[in-house]
Length: 267
Image 1 (spheres, rainbow, N blue to C red):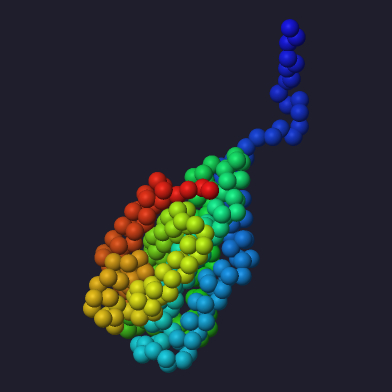
Image 2: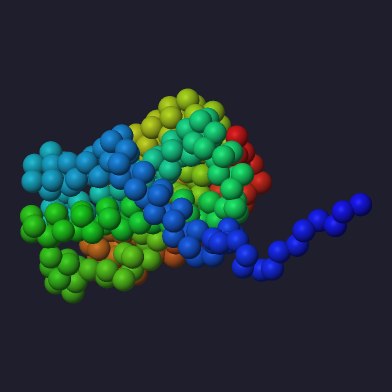
């Protein structure tokens, strides 16, 4: 019986091996971000609609909004942008990736599943950063000045960043839960319906104080209402996010994340 040949380390070059975790995360997040920004439907949902609403509600007095209008409208539009990218767009993309077998093929590579999820979340965060910068620059061009808010005391931009991160975590977990458990066609329909319902009655465009009492009570426990109220508190009133909205966002993020970890299917 012949002995199989052995070779010294370094005989064959290049030496194929799995990349570093950081390198794989950077590559995965970069691909997901570029795919999101190249998809026309996602760009319409995450960028164009928030931009149109910001300009329309700020410049055209269709709704009774306190002055300065752009400063009062901007928190709601930021909440809408976070919901659009972290929930609706994320759920639809994940649902169709499962349908077309993208995740099944990625699972056959050296990419761990937890890193695949992390890469998608990092990509969502990158899109959220682009949205926030774009919307704030546009708002500044039409007259938004953070120092003019809260009766001259200024907006609390640090608190607004915390609120955006909490909102992205809550909506991101919900998007993965929805897109990872239902059929793609159902995800497409349900995610868009939820987007419209939360936009009109979830405390985003219309503040909770203006909604009818029963709807306002329900909306205060939704991530949309909590995120919008937290952003209004920091950017309009110049105070820290209320403990109530922060707890609501944390509960949604943790609960949806735990359920998603147990129920998300990869095919």
